[in-house]
Amino acid sequence: MPDTQPNLEIIAPSVEEAIARGAAELGLPEEQLEVEVLDEGSRGVLGVGARQARVRLTIRGARPQPTQAEPQTILRTDISSSAPDTSESSLSDDLDVDDQEVPEITKAIVEELLTRMGVDAVVKGRWGEPDAPGKVRPLLVDVHGEDLSLLIGRRGETLSALQYVTRLIVGKELHRPVAIVIDVEGYRARREETLRRLARRMAEQAIDRHRTMSLEPMPANERRIIHIELKDNPKVTTESVGEGNHRKVTIIPQD
Image (cartoon, rainbow, N blue to C red; front, top):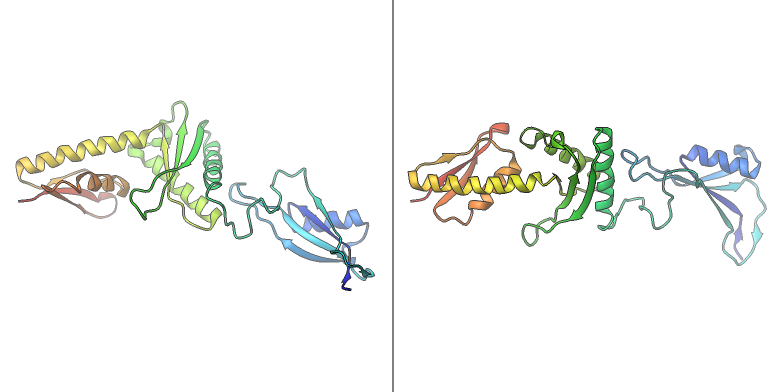
């Protein structure tokens, strides 16, 4: 029969605190305890995705008790802490998060960012459809509230910055990239329709005048809208020219 020893498992915000609590509960100094760290825990990012530490404590020199049963394990959890426990239903060590959880995690991160910015808004996250078969599906985050123009900024610059920071944080938290698209009060949808109309109008001018037409400099996601809108027009082709913030789309008539 295998020798087994009773042990005590403690969950707390940190490894040090878990050991101290276990020692206090057993009434023994920490030097008399063998400590096995099961999970060092994680503080998460902006408090999102945090895990508590988990340790197993065994009394040094405790007399083994022969038994056919499994080793006796007593679990103590810090139920007063706001951090989630490390049960099997929580995030695993490698953060292999189910896709159904990603919108909620992203939503929580965006809400935290907005709170730190002093913005009161309602945030919703959902998976969108990929642009084409085999393409990555985007995670759409919609932000609604009153007077959110400061979140959009000039030509959407603030919104783009918020989206970029959110992608970085979510990617770090999940250990994988996520194609996040943030929209504020339908701004992106309105902007996309404006760009599509602009593309069609400028294409008509290029054809009528038999000359290349240049649009204003745009970020990559807006240039992409122009290219997609005109890709099936046999009378024109499009190219992006320029460098950095001065990169723009040109519409070239075909003979």
